[in-house]
Amino acid sequence: DSWMKGLRDFDVETAYEAMYKSATTKGKDNLLRPDNDDYLRLGYVPLREKYDNSVSHALEYYIADNA
Image (cartoon, rainbow, N blue to C red; front, side, top):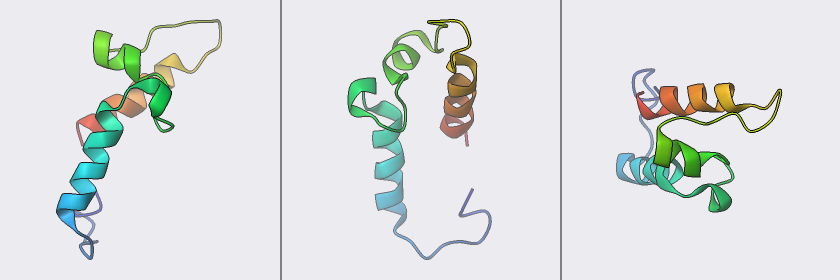
């Protein structure tokens, strides 16, 4: 998204490594994706309790992973 907006004054390799790490690090070690264990294993974030953030977390992960 940044690249398409013309923001190109950064190291692409370092940015990719950071994005990959965020997308593949397990949940307990991933502050950005606390539900990543289930997402990586199941492909979605299951509902754990009434009114949790499972749907919004899953949508955020889907959008980020396919950007």
